[in-house]
Length: 394
Length: 112
Image (cartoon, rainbow over all chains, first blue to last red; front, side, top):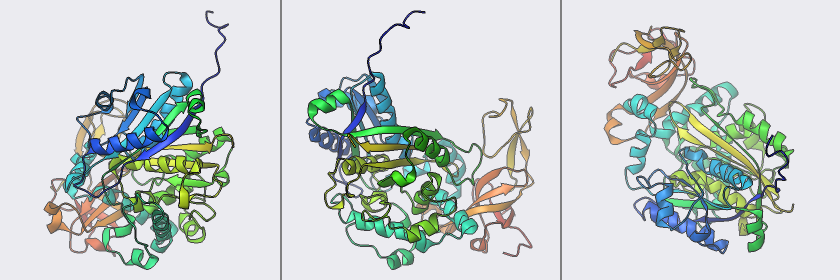
C-alpha cells in the first residue's frame, strides 16, 4: 500500500485566542454589516491581527443576506481556504468553533474567524420568525403561533405538569443572570431584577412572561480559532477546544420530547474529555428561555431528569456560586442579537478562561461547557451543539 | 376549515404529522385521508402578544395534540373556554375555526 510509511507530522492544536463584540443597541440602529465589522475588528485587534491574516471564516446571520460568508470575505479582502455559512440558528456559533477546530487539526486552515450577528428594525424580527422555516410558514403561521415564544412555551407547560416545575424556581436563573449583566457594560439591561418583578411581569406566551423572553436587538459576536504555532507567535496561551458534538432533528416526527439530544451529547463529551459535570467551573447554556437552560442542565447531567426546578431553587448559579451559569448575563439580560446569540456564550467563555472578565471573573476558571440550541421549527428547536473548553496549560 | 387531512404512505402506512413530499420512512408515495379529528392535548401555550393581524383572536391557545392516529400535530384551539385547556384534555376538530389550517376545540363533555 502506498503511503503507509509516510511519517505524518503531529496535528496542529486549535486554540481560541480572541473574542470580540459590537456595541449592542436596540432595534432601528446600525445595520448588520456595521455590527459584523465591529465584532470582527474587536476580535482581530485584541489578537494583534488583521483581516489579511485570516484564512478561514464562519458566518451566521439572518439579516445579512443576500450577503453571505464569502461576500463578507470579499468585503474584508480575506483570502480563504475554508468557509462555513451557519444555518443552524442558536447552534451556529458552537458548531462553527467545533468545525473550525477540526479544520485546524487537519491543516486546512490556520486562522479561522467565527462571527455571528444581526440587526433588526421594527417588525423585521417578527417577519423573520413567521417565515423562519418552511414548516413554520406553512403550518404554524396561519395559527398566529406567537413565534419562538409560542413554540417553546409548551416545553415549560409539560415540564410543570410532569415534574411540578414552578416559575419561582426558573425565575431565580433570570434574576441571577441579571446580576451578571450589571457587571457587563455591553448588556442592554442595566437595572436589577427581583424575583417578585419576574413573577409579576405580564404574560407573553404562557407560561412565559416578559422576563422569560429575550429582547431582540442588534449586535454581533466573534471568536478566533488559530493553530498552536500562530498562538505561540502572538504570545497568547489561549483556550483549548477539548471536544465538540452536535445533533440535528434529534426526535424525528415527534413534538413532546424535552431533549434536543443533550443526553447523548453530554455522554459523548464527558467520555471524550474524561471530565464530568462537576469538573466544570461554569456552564454557558443557550438561554432563549430559562426552561431551555433547565433542560440542558438535565440533559448534560448537572441534575437528574425532571429536576431542573429544584436544582435552580437550591443551587447558587452566580459567578460566586457552586455552578456559575451564563456569567455575562446571557441573552436574557444582554439582549438577543439574532444569530449573535449563538456566539455570545463562546465570547464569554473565552474571556473567562483567559481570566479577562474583570469584575465578573469566575475565580480561577479552568474549564467550562458551552451549549447552543436553535432553529426553532415545527414544535421544537432542531439544532444543538456543545463544546468543552479548557484554559491552555492548565 | 373543518376536516383534518393527514397523509398516509400507501407502502408502509407511515402517517405524516405535517405535509411531506414523500414518505420519509420508505420513500413511497403519500396519499391524503380524512383523520378522525380527535386527540388529546399533550402540552400548550397561551399567546397574548403577536403580530397585529391576529389581535382579534387573542389569546391564542397553541396546542400539541396527539391524534387518535398516533401522530403529534401543532394547532390552535377555538371556543370561549379555550383558555381552560389542560395537559391531557381531549379535543376535537372545530368546524368554526378562523384559521386556514384545521383548528380544535375542547371536546364536548370534557370536564376541563
